[in-house]
Length: 94
Image 1 (cartoon, rainbow, N blue to C red):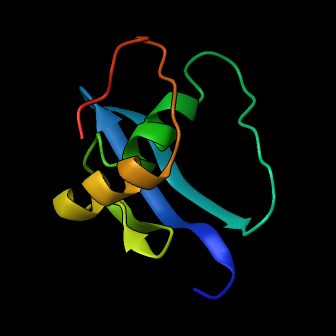
Image 2 (image 1 turned 90 degrees about the vertical axis):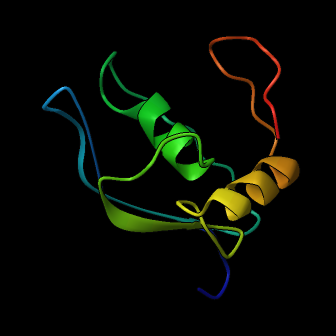
């Protein structure tokens, strides 16, 4: 993975048969700042929830800080090391 803090390849996620993500690729180098911009329904929140381990991937793979985002125990460690404020504005269990 090298100097990447986020690496995602071919992310897929469907809700009730509707594709929220269809093959997303994303690389975020260490020391950089990225923002997600897009219309409602573009997959921004879904992507963040997948990367943080709140949702299970339907396809593809993702790593955050070198840890697999789809792994339950890695998801807990990712959430311990990454700050996140969700749209729900509630405390996030670790």
